[in-house]
Image (cartoon, rainbow, N blue to C red; front, side, top):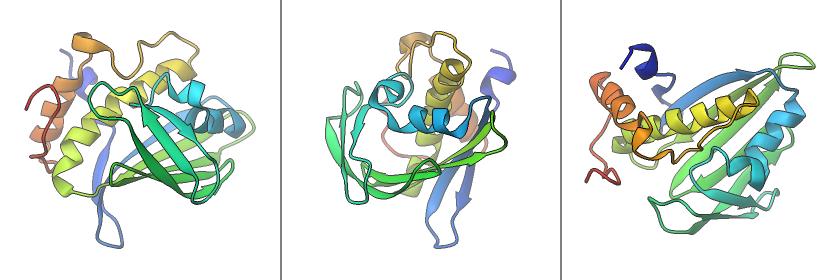
Length: 178
């Protein structure tokens, strides 16, 4: 596979409060309201997020996660919401943060930060978000995407290896491998 296919877009970092995280940034040729739909609407999320997510968009609201072949159905809590600029919620112990910034009337910058409950999930989660965000990128271009669970053809393992090679913390159980 080409080096381009395994180019990593995530950054491993330690937040100011000491917690480990992986962060991704994208710019979409859509107004902020449209990108907000990508990250909050269950039908939009179904095309790229690892689980079906039904969100009560209010602080303390419940999120129901279902349909991920690698994890059990679960619930999370909305930690903060400021439409259309910020959404954060608890997901399996991690804190997911979606920050949107309108660059102009037609372009939006999205930052996804996965604040990790456990450092050794960084490489696994980073590779997973690469695949998910590639599906979102495809969707945002108006093209068909097989979604985040593209099956054996997805480049997930190669991306995971690239994160390992980059020295990103690893060791967590990997569904389908461990």
